Length: 253
Ligand SMILES: Nc1ncnc2c1ncn2[C@@H]1O[C@H](COP(=O)(O)OP(=O)(O)O)[C@@H](O)[C@H]1O
Ligand SMILES: [Mg+2]
Image (cartoon, rainbow, N blue to C red; front, side, top):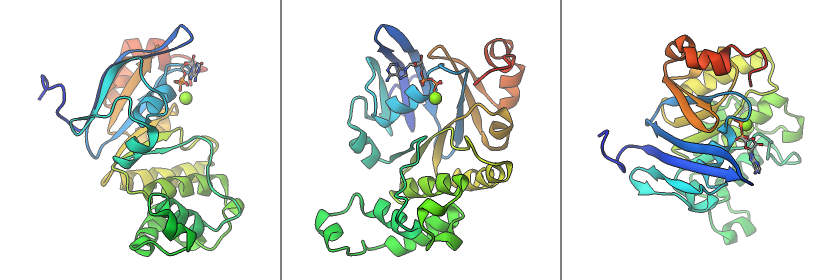
């Protein structure tokens, strides 16, 4: 398996990306295993968000390759990559505040179905079942008729995850999903993610090690756009190179 360049689930090889002469991703390679939660950590500016942008197709790499189940998805558009099962939640909420939680989930479900169906507001087949399941997963069953604009910050983040789940992704890309959440909301998010990772592959960017400890199967440390270390959180915390660039820094992000 190790010598096989295109096997595996999600395989990233030798990615490079620069912005205006600034080499942000510098020969980054990564193997992502199915149904694991992989945390991407590293100091502020390490290239974590850019990595997520490259996987989701929001940015195109200057060189290198990304394979999903053996298919080369490098350079494909954002929509095509999403269609192939890579769901990405953005840091800034994209919920429609004037619509109810239920309506937001319905819109997310029907996004990929026919325009005609949307025009006549016909419920897509399977929507109700999917919606009930997703609402349970993101703990919003009791809030389905609530206007999304009235949700707490944490609930809004969960609705966002729910909207991605309505599209049935295999891989979920989450960039700092608990930023700004209360302690209680973070604890509930830990429960949501630990349940979700049994059925989904999750790549999650995070800098709070206490949160990482409660969810991560594998931790990948990114430093200056390259992989610095990878392993269990325990291994990572013992790694002197990691301590030097990340854990030892007071203002690490
Ligand atoms: N679209 C962009 N244009 C120019 N520079 C960018 C862009 N996106 C990111 N960068 C730069 O790339 C570096 C890495 O950014 P980012 O991936 O956001 O890091 P992280 O998420 O690890 O904090 C930073 O120096 C940032 O300023
Ligand atoms: Mg970032």
